[in-house]
Length: 355
Image 1 (cartoon, rainbow, N blue to C red):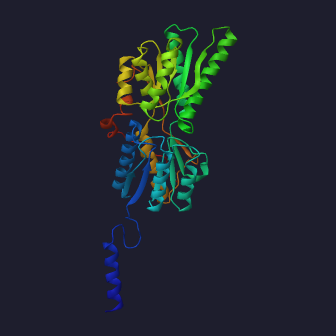
Image 2 (image 1 turned 60 degrees about the horizontal axis):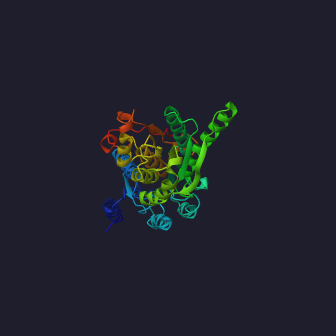
């Protein structure tokens, strides 16, 4: 067999190997592992849909992309999340999108991915070491907490409450996103209190200033909040619960104690039960994120990095927005598209500029 014949057979063989394109790898399907904090919250379902939409759009543009979506069942299962990151590294995926459960505990796993040349984009909650990842795609959680505080204080003022008695429930130690929400909430309330004191007005008082942690599920939140509310409910005017599960658990606790029409609750995130509670008047307002956009931009940015492209903006953080949802704007199409699957599919997501 001549040399030219051998080379011809090798060229044909290379085209028959899945993922190959004449040795260039240009048509190889990129495997992007998306790892949420957990699988039980509506938030992560929207992240998944956004990630899949980005993969579909990229594939339509000629960059074959596949999303592998896997996470721990609950948001307090740190070891399973670490194991999933390690498995993704072992599989040699092309990139990882990660929502770290803990700002410190996940650093080593992300470092391992980086050492193996696998780029990482962080979503939702930040890591302690920002040098380990490409981009941080997330809500401005501190601003979201500030928005929640302003809404709660305004609502109580409209109800004629002169000296509000407040409760801040915490979610879970180490969760950077909710800690930022709590911090923003406290900053606004503390500033409002200083202003009241300067004017000689009645002070805002704390029935509980982050002393109670509600945990990762609606049930843990219900079990932690209910005894406290049973004891202190008649001394409380307003409550802030900083995520979906904590807000859902507090709603159930207030309802079971018949405090739902007496205590003003401000929540964070959306789900069908929370939106129903908002319609029923059991929740005064929700700070809603844009997880669909978060999932979309995370995958899109990661693929740009894998393809050797750089984003024009050097800032590592890409904000996805935060929105106050009340009964007044709940049915607005722009509000509905933040969480409704049928409307999410119709959205056009603006992407960052590439150099």
